[in-house]
Structures are given as C-alpha cells and as structure tokens.
Length: 84
Image (cartoon, rainbow, N blue to C red; front, side, top):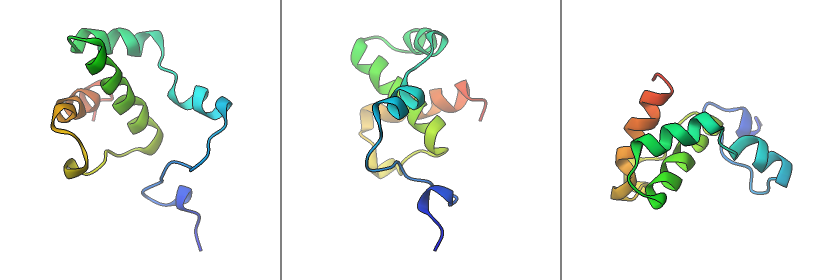
C-alpha cells in the first residue's frame, strides 16, 4: 500500500520534530510582511500565515465546510500570493 504522504492528497504527519516544524512552518520575512499588508489585526495575521504555510506544505486547502467563516477570505489571498 502506498504511504499517505506519497498520494495526491498528502496529510500532515501525526508527529513532527521541532526541526521539521521550524523548516516547514516558519514564515519568511517577506511572507510576514505580505500577510501584514493583507490583514487588520494580529489574529487575522496568524490565521493567514497558517493558511499559507499549510497550503505550501500540503498543496491543498481543507474543504470549505471545515473552515471557520472568518478564515475563508484568506484562502483567496493565499492563492493570489502563490500565483494559483
């Protein structure tokens, strides 16, 4: 059987080392500045950066029904940032 991380829809590993977390989810300065230019407050800044880094890692967004209404706007911003 193929490992889930080698399929078309990879999932996050249940356990990541501190090193893996830092490498995959630490935003660059440019990513933080971009997110600041798109948001009004720190809560939205964090949400947007999490969306960006999660999409970069997995290659897809969760289903709309699984996402809080307040974060749906960020999906379009991430797509625009990544040229999708």
